[in-house]
Amino acid sequence: MISRRNLDKSLASEGVDLLFYLIIEKKGKRMLKPLKIDTKVPLKLVRAIADDTIIPSFYSTLAKNLRERGVAPGSKVQLRAKFSPSHEMIDPVLKGTRILCEVDV
Image 1 (cartoon, rainbow, N blue to C red):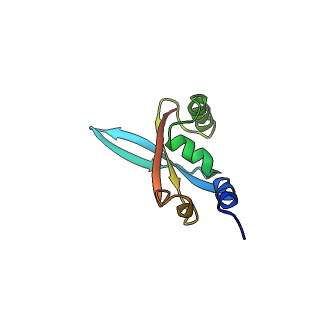
Image 2: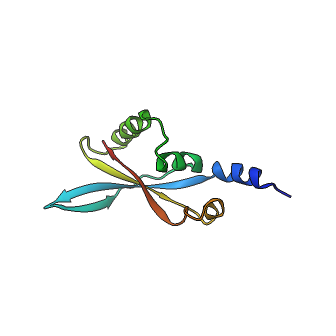
């Protein structure tokens, strides 16, 4: 039998899909354009971003990586996490797709 602690530890390292959207503002309205970037990160990193307990240099590194992947400097990108049904076992809030942050590239 697997203990709850071991289950939580293994699920915390399970990958979460990240979705990136370019924010376009026209005439006071915001539109989102999906970027074709496929990335998975561990659940514990997603929780750190959502709880705002991540180190500040993470955002500058993310902006640098987005520029390397072809996102124009000066643009703004929204980062979302797409959770799987197994993530809901850890916490019922981890369900569906949630906005994590916005990054200035």
